[in-house]
Length: 615
Image 1: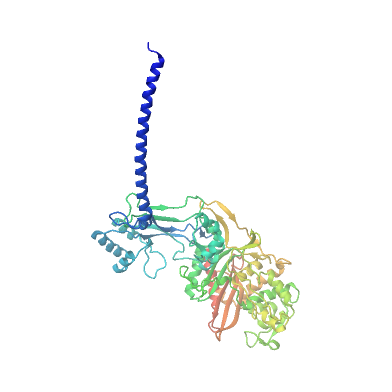
Image 2 (image 1 turned 30 degrees about the horizontal axis):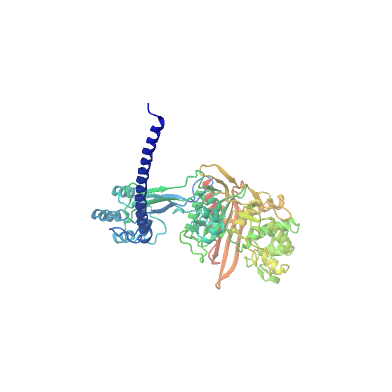
């Protein structure tokens, strides 16, 4: 047996020689790897930095190619919430099928033949179609010249297009914010791009990337009032991936990207009745009304059933300076004899006149230069009769007994000269949330008017001079009388629901309380309701006796001069059916010639017949 020490020393020498050889090999390998890495890094640096503008035998611009190979995206749905009527019928957000065209490259005679065939299917001149396609820099939905919205494809067109299988041309569902039959467009309003307001209102959404400065934002109407609820969880878009030559990349093609939040977009549920709304708007068209409005309220609680305004406007092409997009139902204008309802209420409440008290009308009230519409006068007439036939002289005489402060007090109690739409201060400290965008308060007296002057009081009593009232206030005045003198706050949105139908927020009914007292007495309100029935039975509203329902109300004509020409606002406010009221209605036909006949009566009757048919 050999000594252990001899074996140990021999192995140590062999091991030492082996380690030296391994280190040498490792050094050589590291040297080679370092050289290759430096060569690769240098080449990579040249490609990415120095030679990025022109690389490879194909002379491809890598900076440009990196952009071209990004997704070419197009928005199909902004993700914005929609409006619904009281029975969950959609008012906005109609889905159509349209043709999406991507700027892709396809060099073949067959492709050109198919593109010509596509023009035939679209029924568009070939030159116009080729010009559209060749001029594309970004994806776009096809729309003919002078059209504001994407083209709506028919089922036949869809079948024929899909059979072509053209690259870069796809039939896609698209959400049209405002359908062709867009109803209540003045009330709902329109959206626009407003980067400054987006930055001010939704900074956090911009920071998170959910919204951009070009994202739609409410510009008027309920679109503006409820914009915070309507902002969604993100848009739905389609992306097409192409290479540097704008050829679709195999395996990627088109991809739809949509937000994953199951609760968005939210649903804004209004109090509107869509069929009634459409029928009333068709009536306005039929009657050829150029300017005015209609307001229909639920007689029980003041909910807005319908609200229509004229002139009409295109939500895709809004001209702010024209003002046609403004909701005339919320604009304060001279009410004429409709205001006599307030004078009657104040006189009865203060005990300064009685229904059977007699006034003398000779056709003129000389000391104020005020005349009655009946030139020869009404002679001896009771206060109740004066309301039915709308005698100016009798009401001017009654108003002489009232002070300006008393007139203002009862106007307040009846919901005039103040905003009456649903409002809440609970949305944010120091801020009032109002459902109706652009609602005006109206007035009785201008700031510089000598309120105690007899002539001013007389003119105010017949709804002239400085008096301004909105059609919404006028319809709500009727609701107040039908509810025993308690004024309501009309609402037009009753709740917000999530995408699955879950309740997010409810807007409860509200009463409109005056600063000192609430409303007027039950006896006075009942008296005025009966007086309104007499207006149709024996007064200025006799024409309404031919309506489907028994009706009641009050007429009004306000005189004015526009560009040197005499014009009038024709009003009628009332309710129906008169024996069991369901609806309170105000109609106004604005700025018509004095000798054009009473258009307001025809409009009021038509609206009431629509409501009768729907009941």
